[in-house]
Image 1 (tube, protein in one colour):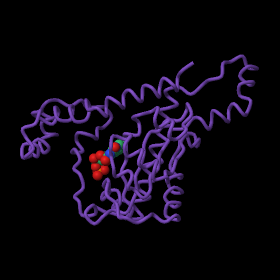
Image 2 (cartoon, protein in one colour):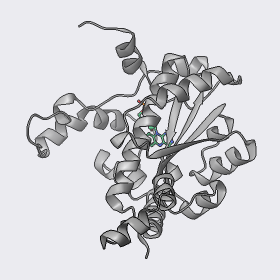
Image 3 (tube, helix red, strand yellow):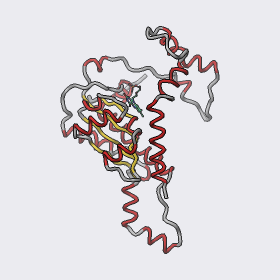
Image 4 (spheres, helix red, strand yellow):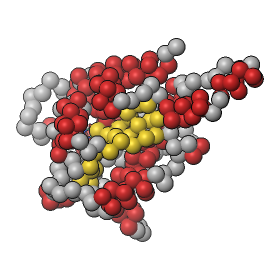
Length: 262
Ligand SMILES: Cc1cc2nc3c(=O)[nH]c(=O)nc-3n(C[C@H](O)[C@H](O)[C@H](O)COP(=O)(O)O)c2cc1C
């Protein structure tokens, strides 16, 4: 198989949660953000904003509010990615769109669920572009999905208006030697993920095959006996029904109801 530097970067990337104690130079940060802003964006509207968190106190708060992950406070660069319709909606109002709609005898539309999802797509694509740009410069990164929790707290912390939703946080830094040497995580085999033309719902045999490797690993885990018997039960308890997931559901519902109210 042929390779090239871009594929090498994609194939070797892994999440990095331990960083060398050295800052990312300002011009390198600029390169990352500049490259990220070349990401595709729906209708070329750039339905996102990026907040660089430089204040150590705010980083400390995030390390707590994002499900107690202390490495956030130690990350040399922390970027918050926001799905953002506020900028465009404010501009519509400033541009006399309300009056335009009145003249046309139409109600003025407000951002709805679909608009939020579209803005989330934009924000996540720009975030992942930043990940790859950073990786190409020798800088590791880790997503923090828990930024979707504690909606009210994060709105206060960053002064987020109604049509702005914090979709992900990214921590960046130069990986420690140990991180560089760490083996990449495994992925499911492509046959369970990549279909042609139609969705394929998996059956018991396929699931057995898909999880065989993980089940084998679990059986060798010295921390057993555990309150679960297989990967399905483990993932349900550890992820899907965990406190952080329950809080995320509550928080996103609160965000949606503010977005849609009135
Ligand atoms: C949307 C999203 C949210 C994530 N949230 C967290 C997080 O809160 N904390 C964390 O340590 N890793 C987080 N990760 C990183 C994943 O755990 C990681 O990508 C996964 O275990 C695969 O490992 P790899 O990135 O090293 O290949 C997140 C990744 C994504 C894409």
